[in-house]
Length: 555
Image (cartoon, rainbow, N blue to C red; front, side, top):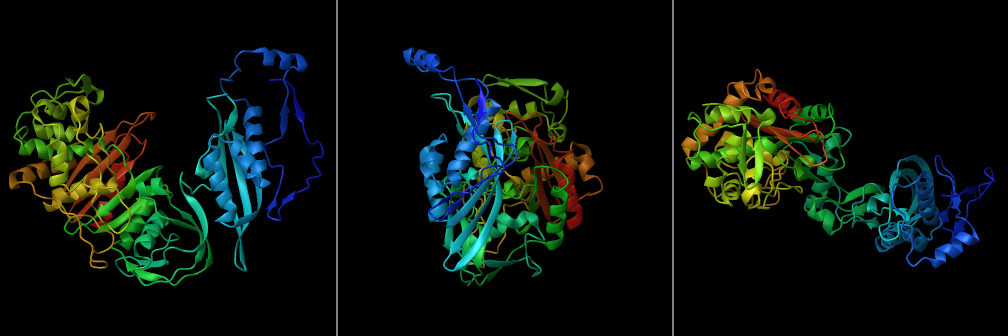
């Protein structure tokens, strides 16, 4: 790549430049140097000019390319040179808009950026600045990171632009704004009247944001002044709520009471903290009240808003369908071959096991995939979709729990994808809230839409299912889940919790993951719960102990 020459040898003489009295520039920081790149001189320039087509660089980025691209962007941003900073990214229009708003709308000034450690193509950096509103100023400090990529059209090393480069809480399309808050703050209470705070329950930051968005004005509070993330259309589609980053003047909070149980919420926080990327929800089947929700990661509420393949936990819904249609019966012999082909795909059981002459109950308890795939040809393409909607209240996008949530998706599919959906793969997407509701429906015998805030608070209408399972179907489904909890793949986790219990494990394969997502859904008495551990492995070993511990706590 040629020689590297240090541009500024006076390392001890860092002179901050002031642009318009607004931006202080700090050149330096661990891990980043400023370099000029040289080719082969005049002869090389002449040869380059003679080429018919420009050479597009390919291959992995060098250390120098990464550090130079990062330095170019960070220095321009520090100096307030928005156009130059934006040009150093692979989406100059989006970068220019957000960087302009950083000063104009977010009112951030006197920015200093300190580059930190480079890890491969990623460079971490620290941000310090001042936010001013009227006569009030507040310091702003946070860490962020950028990734350098090779631009396809010319091979140039540029910053891979995403809004999170400016602030890690931003999603693409979001903005930063300082001013009067759109919604007054809320004082959220648990079911016993105790105040809910993130200091007490770290997982509930996104829940508190959602409560404020929904009930801030309705609860009678008054808005304060703050720096906040204002969500764009794409983020709202993902059920993300606005987020407060810095408070200038406190508003007067209104009070909102939730259904959360302090004992179960505390236990849920402790359980998910034991592993990475875990999420769990606990419900009361007889009412639909949400008693606990927790996530290992606190930036996104996977438990309520996640959209993940549920794996074999979906077999609870599929089993109800097969029993209703007379295609399976708990104690009747049911095929469970090693493999089964459908729609051009060859489906396997875990380790290619088979059950010769076994019952459907045995196949359910051991989570035999082929026992379900083998029935695909007897079903219509929309059979599973209608069962999920009409009996379990899923996949209709009409839940109103009190904060943003995803209600699950069971799309109409055909051929191999339809068959895959029967075992919770294909296009089926769920989260722990949805799968806890599935177990709750089996336990109670009818769907009760989960809710975090009582509908009496704002007179909203809860979603309903159009029909219930027959008494025979319900009885057999409970038998399947109880047998699985006692003798099947859920037995170890559910040990000692019977006899009024039921469970189903699941493992969902995900592209790019060496281990599947582990799922577990279960009920005990008037409690139902579901959890997922992403990239954790088998559900009985990963999510199972989390769910079982909460059922034991609540019991």
